[in-house]
Length: 610
Image (cartoon, rainbow, N blue to C red; front, side, top):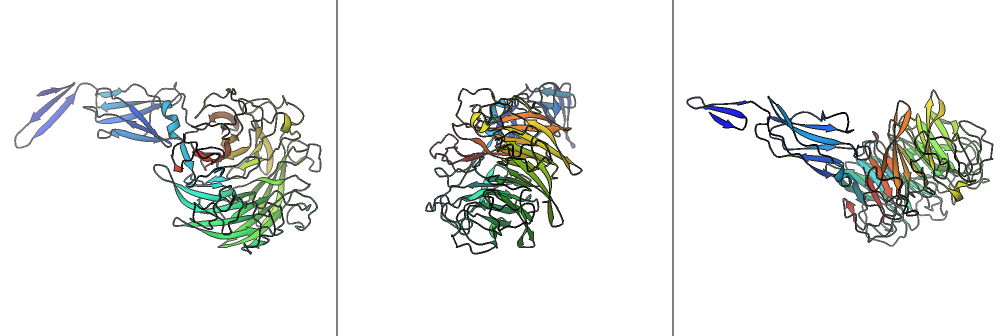
């Protein structure tokens, strides 16, 4: 008989060797260590004598006590990994402990906090050919939506609208810089350890100043990609016309690509049926989940026609804007509808934002310069007393027929709010988020009080911004929440971008001109000592039982002056992956997880993944 710690071991030899161990106490307490990688917490420990299994426990809110994470871990296991949603994770309060156990009980390690490794869990993505002023991951009130995530969060498309290669098609020469501002799109796939570039995509008729990638959209499975080039100049109309003609400047085009077995090819080249100079067709694009319905905005279109499928050739309302719906049957695309506001007017910019429900049957179109002065739902659309207040229009499809369902304004609509500069819609089409980056109420927080307005024209006086949530029930829309940042900053433009999870319960709001130098998740929101620095930020909100609450304040891990982090935001279907663009980020790194401290490529741009 030998004594081993607090266990007794009997060894019987002979024809049948038997070893028996009896323990009178639990194993010694283990020592838990933590490491960090993209969207993962990694736990490790040394084997503990006499332990027959281990348990990892978490106390996420720091007050309710420890609960086991996952199942028991075998005695041979000395490490485990936990996947996290970095932007939703409770960094300030979370604690972990490890138990080493045997039949006599368990002993715990001291509690460990993961907060010191927060920045290492944030993904950092760059173009494979970063260049000065390319603005990879760009976007703003001025620019289109230049990044998209598939529903499962495993396919990502990001554009650089000022990329300069003259290459054409897929995976051409990235190093050619002979076509200034031609634009490019990069497609990435997520693997076990990060992201790899799958394709480098250019227009089939790549030309200088086309800004290919001004807007991008992905189908739910990530296998269909739509790309807008709002300054493309062909005089073609419809589907697959003559791409070589450059006689209609700024008319715009949309390109559709498909992926099969990991290979991308161009499937269609789309133009407006009433193609005209300066229409910027492709300013925004949106795809249904199955990729068979495509909505395209042309905010510079000039027709004074109203409603659905009216006179396309009337050019009596410059900058009124239009939206076009295309449908795919088999491999063939065709225009299904030409959509206008009910009261189109000059410079309303109908089409400044656009979104589709998963089934493609609900279409949302923003008009950030619309002038209606009536608040709420379905007010007087002919009213023009609120110059530049902005509006959002909701259209629905039954069969192949489209009609307007709602005319949406905020309950506190005011002139020059730019309501509708950004829109997002839930998968079922029943939750709508709207950004108004030039709104100037000084209230704060989710479910903010409507009041405390500053100045008479916030585009020149304040522009702190706001976001609005609307819900649809039985075909009727109502405002659910009015959201302001917890810290209101002059000219921050909260609401420049908005994104919703598929169920509509997670909202991300981009604030690209925000001035705090905090880094990571939930740093100081009140530090505006670097006023005018435009580091940028994203605010996260969550909804439970119809009530919205402030969840997180998200910053880059390498905050930089004038980076405009938040110029693009996107969420995957379950809201567990957040993408944020910083169009003026300066690193010359390329690919995934490069050197964030390298600042040798001014305004090359970057994307961060949480």
